[in-house]
Length: 433
Ligand code: TRP
Image (cartoon, rainbow, N blue to C red; front, side):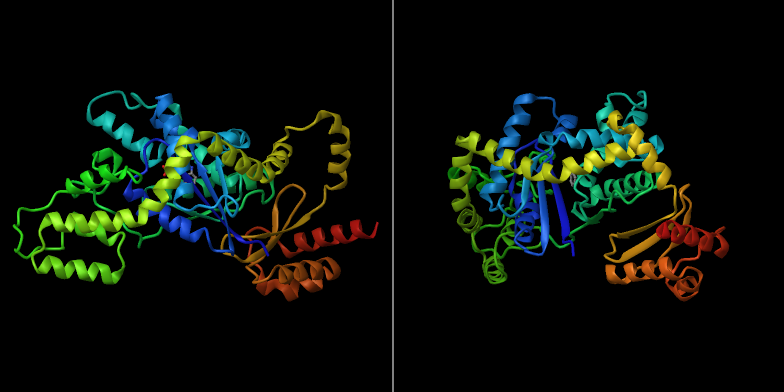
């Protein structure tokens, strides 16, 4: 049975900070150690161009983010770790998907709509300053996911709509070209991961300029931690953990016991300077061993390049054959094989059984007429074998089997039993020839 495939994209447009680490990298790296799943992690550098047109910064950020993931423990031997721009199949698939995606669907994307709303509010033209890149961004993201037929995509709340759009694109393509080329991916929204506050107490975010870089050198880390906003309570005065950015950041790194101990010290009136020292030491204890590896990789970008190239080779082993199949599906084909293809098409102008797995983990089959009309649609089966046995029974026994298998089928409007039996007969005759 195929394993569940997880895929995560990280846009290289900044320097990773402690919030990224605690909220996303650390849980993702832990999850990547699970032997029962396949993991794809990639640097979404084409996406970076949408928001960042400073080439030095794109390159710098690509280096920093690649080095951060590796230093934090991502093992490129066990996961597929690659850079989006090394997979030419992704932009090609983007175009195929563009041609099956309604423009209206993209009009509704949150990021695009927010830009339009802002323009409307300020009395500008609706599309002022909006690039086609921003508009097309959900399609590029759809291609990132569908090219590897990922089942699960861990994302933040803000990305859930993009996953719904990816599902739409996948089903449109499957429907138009008449086969289950794509699995429908699902968003996984992890609610329980830590969101760290930044230096000023608001959510730690590049856009608030309140971040602590993950791999700040030790002394800079200490300085930044010392600049975390606290209240004016003096040493000896009891302090509140609620609303204390310092305490919340500590919780993002400490064990339950460690957090309980600091809570106690707050109540006992620890001086802010001492609390900051405790926080600094706790973070540094976790980060220091990784920092060494990070600094090494930053100083050896050729090694990063090599790791990413090896990842691309691994990724393209899947992407290249799928794209080849998709090219054929849409009619972009080697013309030398045109006459063969035609006779094959004439021979296969028969109804067809199709068996597939849905993202709910169940197995399904359907019968599709030569003209694409859906004749039978099964309910879910727990095992592929059960779906296969039903198909075999229908092929063998025709009308008799149809009555027996009815309870495992969906009712389809406008499809008479006669039509189905006729199709089954046609299949049986063809099999006998
Ligand atoms: N859009 C995502 C973000 O801004 C990054 C991303 C690009 C992504 N392609 C993806 C995430 C595919 C998951 C899957 O966070």
